[in-house]
Length: 452
Image (cartoon, rainbow, N blue to C red):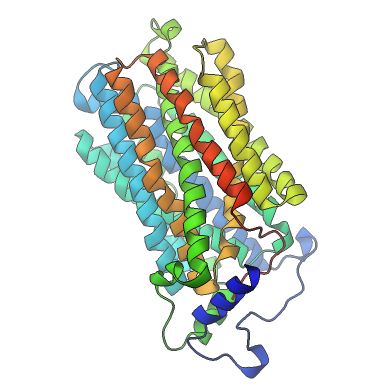
């Protein structure tokens, strides 16, 4: 399988014959840095740009999750417990995930054609602009449109940032890089929770915080150059560059389809949990006498607990990948995700007992850090951002159905906290499928040189 993949990469990139001294199309070998002080200024700038992009990614993607219930209720002019709130808020979240999927493919293609640095700037401007415009929404469908458009940039930033780092930093550091990058997302989520906490009385105002990432673009434009590997591949591809269809040809097709399935299954459960555990928390019977600002502050604190556990999970996942390899680590963490969700939601629980289950689920979310460095090496250079972005983010098309289905089923059952817990328990079966696929079907990429 590895030989087939190498030949397919050569086929995709042979649109122009490389010089005789470099017939494989690969970049000339360069001694990898062994310590942080050995890194070049370009590597540092690329790493900082990708990390900050992911930080603000996490900020903008979770602002809505934290204020969905009060903000949608405000737009609909109904009480928070009205079934319409759950229904329309889940539609908005589904549109967001669908936009995220399209953005991964769209900006991934831009990243392969125009360069990683340029594409990174475009993605950040897109999600910052439309997150800020959400402040001006006056109806639920206006908010849906703004969230969909913001998601295009958020989905694209994942693919571009992952490729930028995988092409500039030492490959033996990839598991730890994945953990550090994902920690940027987690800290962004914590900033979103902090904004929600401080602006608990005004859910609309939190979206203005999402404009801040636009300032990062000014620095990226001046300081972050294109990667040498991408520039070399562009010089060699002087005639026709590989098209999107190449993802579904030859040995690359098998990689695309299987990776897409694993991402779709794992992300469906993950995003359904991230969206609905907050709603379930707000509807606990013991919180019925609490005011809306009090509930908002509680959910911000709970979000911090989940995200702190997730940060620990990132480095646990990196350690597992170094020890077991990416494939076994992804399979094991998906299996743990299944068990922790099942145990947490299989029976009704009060707030005190939920803390432990939510922390366990957060720890298992470290699995998503591994996709960052696992996916890019599966694809040739001029399909790398397209392939990684498409497979990871198109999985969100399937994931978009998670919040919608849970919202529909829960509303049908009366919208109670108990009904939501039962649906979440059944949803726990989804990451089990991802665990089986990852263990027995996917290829290992630990220590591999990136294909040309």
